[in-house]
Image 1 (cartoon, rainbow, N blue to C red):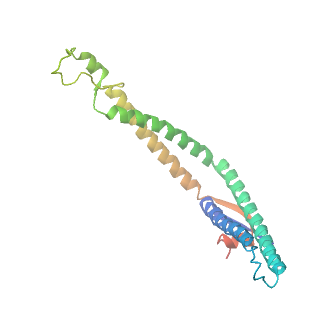
Image 2 (cartoon, rainbow, N blue to C red):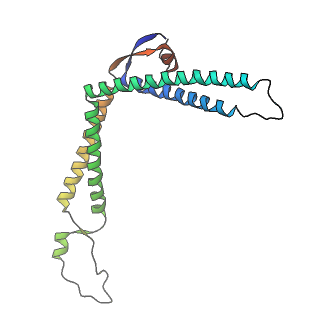
Amino acid sequence: MSKQKYNLTLTRWHKVIERIRDEIKREESHITAGISKLSFDRTSKPISAVDIANKIQSEQQNSIQNLQLYLQAVAKIRTELAKANAKLGINERLNKIESSNKLLTVYEAVLKHENDAGMTASDFDALPAQEKNAYSLREREFVHAHSKEQVQAFKDIVEAGRRAAHKLSDEIADINRSLLSIDLDDRVAAIAAIKD
């Protein structure tokens, strides 16, 4: 089992993980497929059930060894990526984006409600009382909880929050171009299409 150091961008390492995971799925299905091959018809016995069972057992053992190798590689890459993400400030930026997006969602919900037809509380208070009768057009008015100035301030907050999130996302994209060196087994590197 020979290993080699590979220098790839953080973004590319994420792609490598995807490729290895695809191979893990193939190995898992190969292992489980062998189980169903052990069902025999007693009326037409194979030449040697023992030979077939031994062959399947050998194939499964090879697949299990490959699976272990691939799983270890994914764990190693993810660990190194996590260290790099922390060192380069990616996690901090992602957390800021997440919390900002949650807050923006609340502001947007308030704005959606405030954009519905209606009037401000002060405008409602200025209206004369209306007598209740059969000819009244409306007995109830929708009143906004926030003034026009507050609504505009919320809109400004949402816009500024979006710009800040975009800026952080751009910073993350730039950081993800950073190189990271990881030693990988040649077989894993071949599967991930990074070995020449």
